[in-house]
Length: 254
View 1 (cartoon, rainbow, N blue to C red):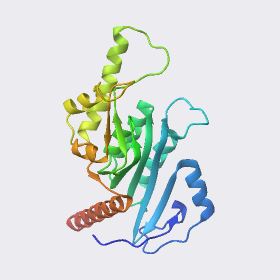
View 2 (cartoon, one colour):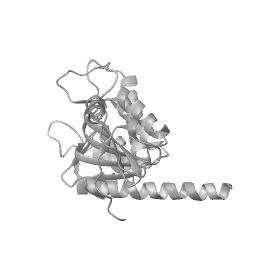
View 3 (cartoon, rainbow, N blue to C red):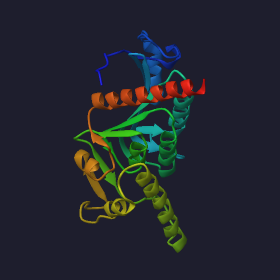
View 4 (spheres, one colour):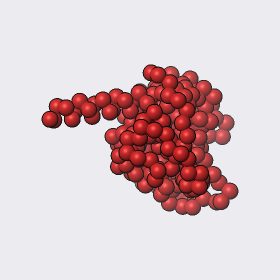
């Protein structure tokens, strides 16, 4: 895979279909896009890639305090839908540094990522904990920095909870949803995933397991240990493969 030249970041409104050149940066639009949603779009060597960041805590149906760094699912879902439907977007890069957050919001984002027809690559930097794990493994190809970690633990709930069998059954069903999604989109088995989640020997005040970059790959959660450059190289390769497949399909249909 040949190295792509370094290109400037551009706002989506300025990107033509299938660009063959680098578009000048509109700094005002770029700043607004990054501030509001942590999203940026780059055009390089004929490829247009949208980059989404999953940072801090994934916010669901309840607004978190303003002191919290958050990723809002009402921002992520429209951006993912837009990337899937926009003909000028060739692929998607998802960068995670998250402590987790709302289970339903995280799974909603992960399901959208897993269902995209365009190539998607994820890169875990710092941490991809809790419900960030399904989002990381939902990509077609996943990377993790050597210094990054991922925490696997059972579902938790804040606030008052009724101590009745139905409540515990609900927790088990929710945990199964997460486990099934992770095992369907990675190489780890459900037995091993549950074993890591229920580990009582590692965390002092909790149960679960913390995996560093190499361990996450060994366990089959993540595909490779890698850097941003390696993640983009893999994404370019997937885009080329996808476009070659489209060209062959068009030729057969003629």
